[in-house]
Image 1 (tube, helix red, strand yellow):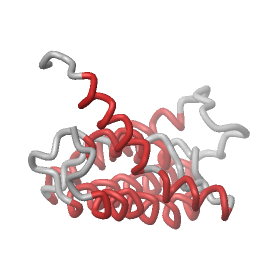
Image 2 (image 1 turned 45 degrees about the vertical axis):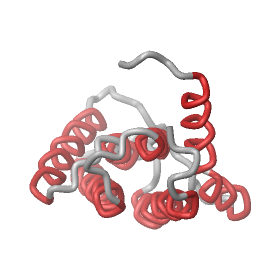
Image 3 (image 1 turned 180 degrees about the vertical axis):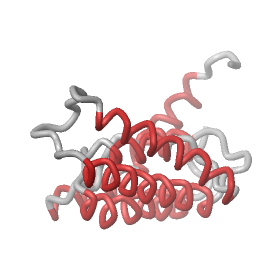
Amino acid sequence: MPRSEPAADLAVGLRAGVLLTLAAVTAWLSGAPAVFPSLGPSAFVLSTDRSGLSARTVLGGHAIGVVAGVVAYLAVTAAVPVPASPLTFDPPWLAASGILAVALTSAGMRAATLVHPPACATTLIAGLGLLEPATALAVVLPAVASLLAVDRLLGARLRG
């Protein structure tokens, strides 16, 4: 990694934070879980390394991730009872769902040439049941689109 440049580092941090504003305001006003862990890595990537990155890749990667996560979660929970609380891994059914979700997402992103690594966090959010399937399908893509909308509004300004 190249030597740190304080002004550029600050610009990257500021841009990444600003990219989350529309999703955060949506979450605040609506109560919808429009801010979730995989938005952070996407905001970071949008704020730094632009090589090979497009809105199609970001949105498409997350779309594959959320669908694969929901499919994995529904497949596993159709065969076994849903745990009483998220992240209960005994028995290991949710672990199996997470593994299946990441495998489907990784293969799907490569096959569609829409590789966006933060989407593997999205698939775990859905695959582990951290967002209910209907909520995941309704919230994830609009939240990712909000990052892209703010990124477009900012243009090249603030990019490190």
